[in-house]
Image 1 (cartoon, one colour):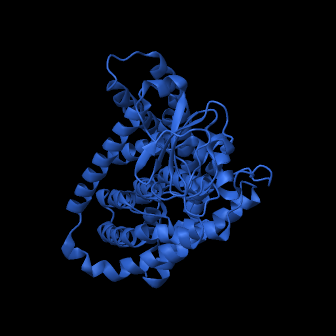
Image 2 (image 1 turned 180 degrees about the vertical axis):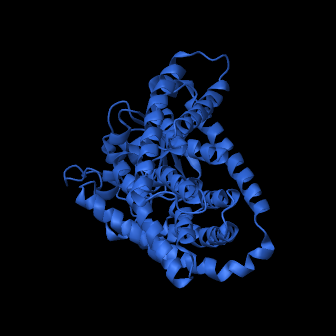
Image 3 (image 1 turned 90 degrees about the vertical axis):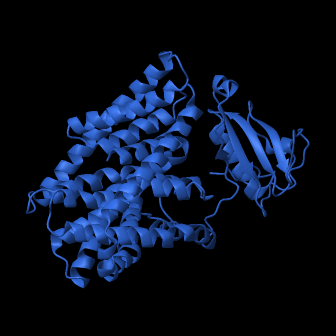
Length: 439
């Protein structure tokens, strides 16, 4: 559980709020209604096809309903996806751990189901509200403190941020709230605030998350018994196919319908297909499967073996195919600006961001001179890398496909800069004349 908290903390610290802000309402629907649909559909499928007892079926559905934050962050951040789609996937993976953990703990308690469905839903809602309240309280307080407390060494700031994450987790748990939701919200606030030594803090968090993942998989590997796995291979693969081909698509379809009904934003059929296939599972389902096993629930060890096989097989199957699927569906956005983390005092003093932009083939930015980009004030293209050679451009430098640009802009202007670059890439230097705003 501590390892999962560290992984979620890293996810919150490295999530760009400006990219996920518009996606949060849809992601919340996926992390709540979508979770419920996925659990019920998968439980019904394995109960009918495999003859699994309903409680075990619901537990299996709960284990596998949550997308894994570490898997999503590590794979999808390497994909050039449109900001809103990437934001939905990132925010969903950060939010959906909390309800699944609560559901698994409730289903694992005692020898019979202790609570009615309304009681389970009420307890889940209360724990999520408490967790969110703790996260939204500790996050801003941490920002206020870290901006005003002069620590004796720069290396103490990353430790202080991680300590705040653990304080949040502990506080929410003691108040019978969701510690995971509290950690994610706190670190999301901290990661998007202009804190001292922000780049070093994010680098430290990424290293800590890698250590947590390594330790977690070592522990999980020691819990798995290879001699028991062949006997559950076929049932596990059947359950995995039900998850990937039925439960996850159903949860996305229902969530998209709810989001459209509530006017939270619509998802195209291409985006829904990609969301269905991109529901990656990693260490989290295996850890969740260890909870009823540790509680001594009969049959829990078999579920652990099922989940272990499903995660290994389908992560290997889904992860490498995501870039190809994105291109096949026309969702790849290779010209999107990306953050570059540079620990530089002048950038911090200017409250500035350093962006990296690559001009893909087919972009109408090819042939445009830098002054024709019409970037906002206080924004400058500081370097161009072309054919392995770098040079400092002038206002009349003509950009070519394949160029990589380093752009310095203020945090306040960043979103405007990204929209303008996107618009020029689509419609050329007369993008504004054609009404293209890059949204």
